[in-house]
Image (cartoon, rainbow, N blue to C red):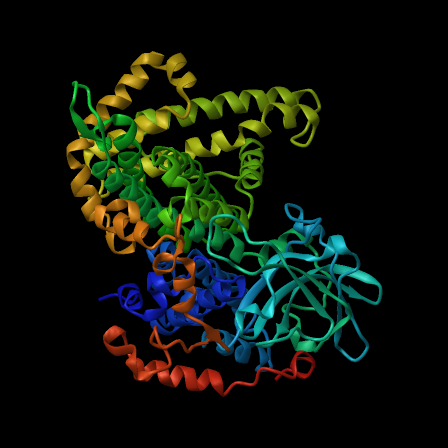
Length: 624
């Protein structure tokens, strides 16, 4: 039994432990307590994070993130961005502070954050305005000069009920000289209040995903000890190169979060597939009733999603290996950008279709589709807007500053498409540059930048197809469906450059969908998503139970047996981060039962309870 299955057996991970009508504070605390349970069961170490171990990779493709999208966000930031960034400087620090902070984060005595972007500086984060001024005694003065320089939107509030440590990026100022951007270790809050000089404003909840306490944060002359600096005081010779090194974990995050599309596609495909099999509508013959899944408009998106998840799984395994072995940072950036673009565009397209095919049911978060789609969209933005990443990559490739692995089979349709669209773009770029233009002028902006995503997508489709060819989990029928679906992304090119007509492209896609249809049940069963689907629309029993628990209003008033009042009385409450409601077993009690290792968890809770949660000013200034 893997750790994810064990976690599902814990009371805190039960569907009833997250009340839909709960307060924001309740929802936030629940997700952080769930994150704590994951840390305890997974056992992620600093070494795992630095070496990009299989354990680190597998967390980002695990179904666990579909059960609570907030937990995935919290821990990806904690492990990859915060611990990953700090660990890069641990060897260079002669004192023990950095290593002590890493141990504190590894044991989840504090939760880690990554504070780079500002209200006015997202895509151009290299121009951020937050300053860290060097003082004569070796300390630093961390300051937000104006509201537009406020850090956005990492979680920084005490709502989590536990201390926070952040990697904060700021302009290093020494004797009035700006020496480039540096990361600093900053203690933001303890379990119940902010550190002196730091203010945090809680943003409204996003529609869809589980609640993460995203904030707008400002620093008012916060004093930091010398050991808070990650890096050196020396002026950077190559500002762009040094900045890229400081934020190198963003590239890892871009790849990891895009891999999260794999379990999301499988869960949503299962919801659509089973819902379509359960719901019956009028059939082709008079008086006949057929499942909605009978229609291609219903089973088609489910088959595409299942196929895409398997292709992306094969592609992820290949690109991860190449990424880990690649020593050139620029090529690593390129590999991550290409994978992220392919996963993002294709997944978002089919997720929208799945939502539509569930009708009004698809709009409700309790059916999981909109929650997971919105969460995935947020993840794509979080580690760098992929439209911007595509623009940079295309410019570098067209100018000859970078190269990518060539097609293994140049005769495949997707490889021919990649070659064709890039040849067109290269001709356009050459014409622009030959008239004394540059990749930054208006003509380049107007003619090529809007095409950048499609150009990178063409590379991603070819690479994904090559990986899928070698995968035992991708059947020939699935491979053909993936290829046909990719072709519909750019039908004009195939009509112009192949023997396909517009109608033949649609006919070809319909035929490969039909060929895979007999495998739909098997693919749904083998997806591994069943244990993670909580949507009530997948079975008649679940739907009946769901409706029976809804508040019922009649001429006699509200039926208290099914009202929200009943939900409120049985709701799990959180006090100081520990469960204490009698209706739900506390993770800190022995009645955890056979869901894991209760003795080990008791020791974990004792360790956490023994940690100080106050005196933040001295901890920021006196290094523990």
